[in-house]
Length: 403
Image 1 (cartoon, helix red, strand yellow):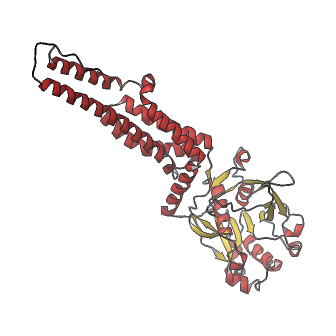
Image 2 (cartoon, helix red, strand yellow; image 1 turned 180 degrees about the vertical axis):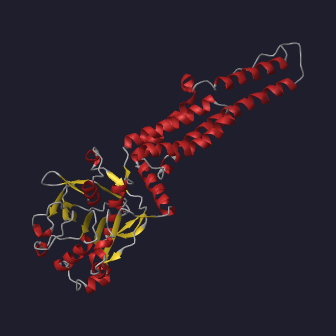
Image 3 (tube, one colour; image 1 turned 30 degrees about the horizontal axis):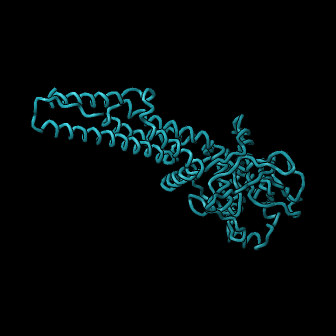
């Protein structure tokens, strides 16, 4: 056997080996142990360090920062600003119940579907306040115990709520950086039972609550802060309501009106992905999200890990089914496609797709490294065989190099 014959045989054998790697990866799983190990380790590290949630928050923040806010058609916001606090309430806290009653009466003349009052009315001076005959959600003050449950301070000074009115608890949960991203639909009480969040309570009144919503009430629902509000000042509201045409115009018909304070003494500002917002503005966002079903439900950590594994294995399979060049191009398309699909399944939104990108890239890098090592070995063997073929030939057959 000549050196040329040996060269042809070895090259053919190596090409056949490369062709075999195009078979379905389940038949050659032993050849992909590095990539499979990377998938397992990456998923474990991601879950232990809460990296999926962190990247989901970061990508959601980026989406919120670039999206164009849309007008809120189902919710109107009425604010008590510093001037209103000075002129109408004489800078006194708790607020004057008679002035607050006049504001609610003016809102009621606009024929809203419901009113959400984001003002603490637990003081006894509110017990005799005149209440209009409109469904009202009263936000209550509360104390959170060590076990995470709440003790409520009843609204309206502890007096019985009128028919159609309900108490609700507006909590602004902050993450490790002090940023408010969402809310719960329901909160547990120390005395037993649950209390609704203002947005969830308003959605109940309007009949916009899904049948199984209570099953997921204690899970975090993220806000994308998509709504833009044009706040109405309470001073302007009272002046406009004095007009004879105000009630005929019914400016709030079919809408939920959120009433809250933006005056500095209230100390009710929070950091959000959209910037500093007052508590009533966050409540208004949650009310609109509940009515329009635009809140983002949180996903199970285990479901997140499962989707990451599926995405990694899908990318791995592509490299075994296709030729290297085609697999690389397909894998580049799989990065956004798998990430978008995973986040649609997990969050029913596409905004958080960036949380899946790192793992898919890691799998592609592992495959590139594996292929590079394989082809490097291939070309090294070819170089050796070419060197053998170029040496002077004799009559003694040269043994084939060991694989």
